[in-house]
Image (cartoon, rainbow, N blue to C red):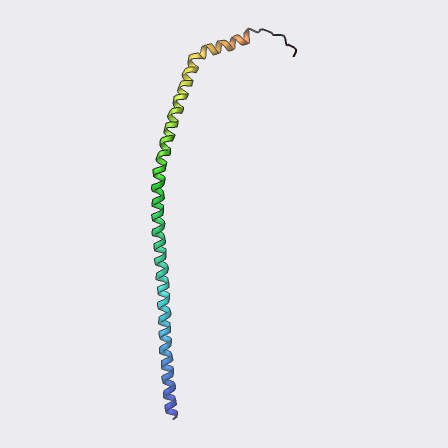
Length: 115
């Protein structure tokens, strides 16, 4: 009977070792699947990010063109006004200088009035 018990115990130990190996393989498989799922999720996130970045750059390019055109138009208008002011200044420069000199050299005192 003791040989039979010993054989039974040996069979149980072998079964336990086999079950332990199966459990270990299942853990390894699960770990690999988790890593694979994580890598796949990262890849999807990067693809999504790249797609959205491209959409944003396209949107930005489309809307920046309008701003650049408006900015160029405003710069042209400003340059035209500055040119007009310079031309008017050069045209009336002599008269302005003469008026200033006249005001300085031809003093006309005025008595203060009581209010």
